[in-house]
Length: 115
Image (cartoon, rainbow, N blue to C red; front, side):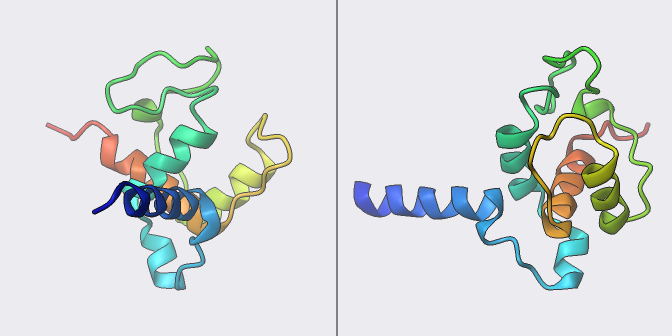
């Protein structure tokens, strides 16, 4: 693969992860994609939250590290409602249900496994 092709593929993946390609079918949106969720979290959430699996201290002391988040939302729709109405400090950004499903999939993928 040439450098130009690689650069184009990387740009396409980044745009997809950041929402340009997140118009998924409802069933897929509900399931989410942890890879896209990780990329999106790194771009949008890491300014406040620790988003890496092994990170335990957030940039903002009030922001829970992603690996400590207790998932209390029934589904991506509930998380989307919460993130767009109750979550502090996401100035001017409204997340889609597909983006929220991806973020939830990522959080689930890095959550400590029981026992």
